[in-house]
Length: 206
Image 1 (tube, rainbow, N blue to C red):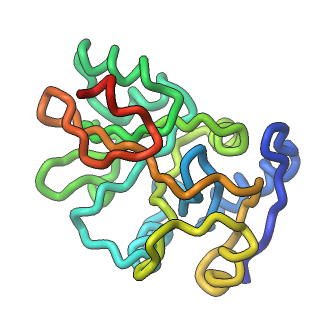
Image 2: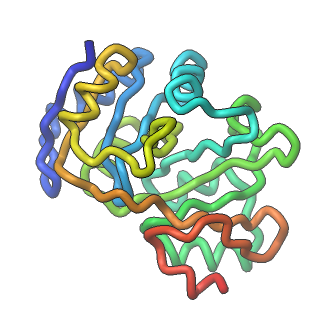
């Protein structure tokens, strides 16, 4: 049964955030809010959590997981950025963008695209997510909480707990965070390629 945490959307309670971070360190898989949809998340080295995300969403090995990072310094540890890409990504963060980039050796192989050796990264603009990432001290391996057969991600914490109570360890709820996923921009080929048009403004990458 998943624990349910009701967190203030702008001033998240430190004790609650600490409890959620401790559960992640103990191997938990959580549903949590971001600035574009709820997401599923687990710790970087949580192999079981990753398998559970794949199972819940029915994802194949080519799916790009996202490393949710607290700031640009952390993001830079996990992906390779040349000067042009550095400037473009930095100008768009924090925000509702996911960037596909070549992974560094810090990224476990199971998180990379099997052929391209790339991974998704992003820095969210959401107080609860950022507080959780700061407390955890490392990225969260994440994937949009969009269930097979659904047209849109779920937006209500109580609904997530009701439907996924048996497969999640915790639900962090801070209110509705929308149904529009991030804009995905692939920089792995050098220039920007818009893979998905979502919440982030695409004009800067066209």
